[in-house]
Length: 589
Image (cartoon, rainbow, N blue to C red):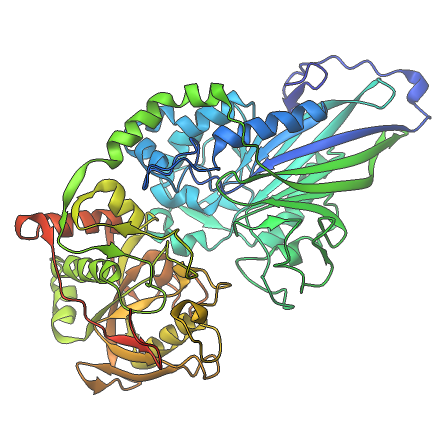
């Protein structure tokens, strides 16, 4: 913390006695306030890919060096994290299982003297108790404006979790004089967490609409005397479209809320300003970093960038106002922060050992390279494991339905090649399979659910996944891939047969949909094993909203994959590939 930039939370005795010269009472003074932001770190700290062992240019070990550069450039600064911080890497998984009371990622933020943190949707993946226990270690303010505990629930929100935050600061003006300022922060998260993590949240908390919450939060911090209001939004905007309406990515509409001076956003893993994914939206300036003429920044993913907003302020008659702004998504430095490396050295070593734990063997390669365009052994392994888990269910009513209705599996690849020369995909060679391999094969801590749907809804599900292909006929497999649609939203199915015709319009691409060789009627009742994200409608899949689930496993799919391989003869996976779906006109590799 800068010697000239003390702070306190509202209502706490000030750390700095502010002496303001009366000569400035009527003379306008100018100062710069720098907002420095991270978002969607997803547990990346060490700059090591634990799945491959490769050293990579990402993570807090690099981000920290860039943060310090930005701090040194402007002493009037505030450091903010925008969520999805503690989930998403092997180190994060190890910490949740073995170091919950001393989370290395929170330690890093404490060490870097972060000021404020917003909670993202993935913070809820491990349950409320784990979330509270992890963030209780924070030396910074933690907020979320649109969640609250149910009156009937045994659990209560911890006292340190604020709906909004107001920091008392002092700014050094251009002439060297010191002046007080109150900076208000409003943090929001998609209400869809109630669907995505229903098994952890139902009956415990409720969420509120992000737009209404933002308006209320802005008014609240203004009532507390905030001179400047910063929206910290763990939500984004619709990409590559001129249509700004989206329930999950709702920032375009929220940004029009009166009273907001700056916006830090995330959730989508994009970089803004500096990219073109939002260029079709009205009132978005992707060059200068403005949304509805409000300064905004989104700093990518895994610590690849930091977001910087410089607000040029003027104070006149005791009132601060924003005269101009500059937004920047700054790529991280190649330099490493040695102190961060030392701080997490033990956690790093423990994670290396954690991912090396053997869980079984495979007689065949499990490879996601072509998983977007054809059936693969890697996806079949996941499908078989999900269906095996269903056979272990003891509930009599569920078992009765499993015994009488068609049962199929749906899953998506997470890390798969998107072009001929793309080498970033999951590849597990025949031989030993480790816990790290399982984590590479299935990157997210999703749980398994069983949904009951109709044949009509199954086709809608497949049609939505088929939007993952470009329209037309392509010469090579990778040319079919619509890279604008993330791989985690392109499900393949196992247990049914179908063809995809990308030459047809969206919504009319699925042909020859059959179960055990017979056409699937629109009214046929089908059970589908899928993850909790998809079962809740994640990815905008029509007909799925959580109400179709008839069974919710308490187990994460990663654990199910481990259990599946360990119950096989000699703990060895081998299976003949079933090519149950094809792209019309494309030969399998």
